[in-house]
Image (cartoon, rainbow, N blue to C red; front, side):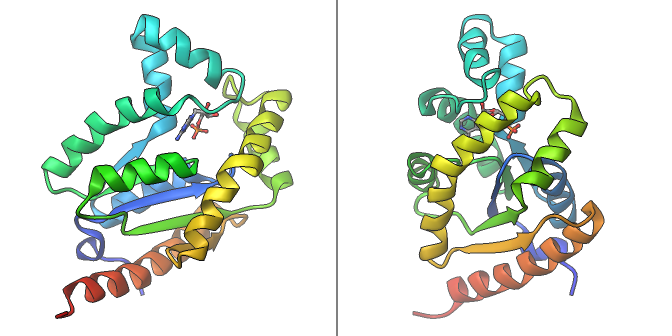
Amino acid sequence: MIATPQAGAGAVLALVGRPGAGKGTQGRLLAARLGVATLSVGDLLRDAVKTNAPLGRTIERYVSRGYLVPNRFVLELLWSRLGEAAARGRGVVLDGFPRNVRQALALEEMLAPRRLDLVIELSVQPAVATERLLARRRSDDGLEIIQRRMDVYDRTTAAMIDWFRQAGRLVTVEAHHPAEIVHQHLSEVVERALSQTMSLREAPS
Ligand code: AMP
């Protein structure tokens, strides 16, 4: 079955996975399919580097070396944008956020009394992900920086993903296929999961 715009209207979804898993591409495709907004934290940070001089220079030091930007900067940038989407009652697909447990907890606090509806992991072998990033030629996509980003993922983000998995709040989609195939699987998995969460929420207590 294919996700309809109604299935995800107002939902807050997080797309997580290692660098090169395809979060950006799949986030845009999924958001268009569901009729919700998309917010890429990597894009927000890169925009801040371009436009906001003192803060931008600080952020750039982390992004260019492949380290996570400290939470206080990320949260400040994200909250105002997320607040806008929430105020319009629009759902959102978050691309690349949260990336550690603290960010996940802060997000749930920010959304309360609502919560994150679904966390979707795009799963891909490190070698496939590395090849994709090398083909992309972004400035933080040199081999040494890619390896550091993979390390940060393995040491920090993977633990957060396991945390959601253990809480039964994670769905995983194999992401080594071509983008259209991944999109198809992703849409099916998300629609199934959302219809379950939505019907649970609507059930009389
Ligand atoms: P991305 O565009 O998702 O590949 O992210 C590019 C870079 O932005 C990462 O290597 C980090 O330096 C930074 N970044 C993106 N998302 C986050 C996040 N949630 N927390 C901290 N830093 C982030």
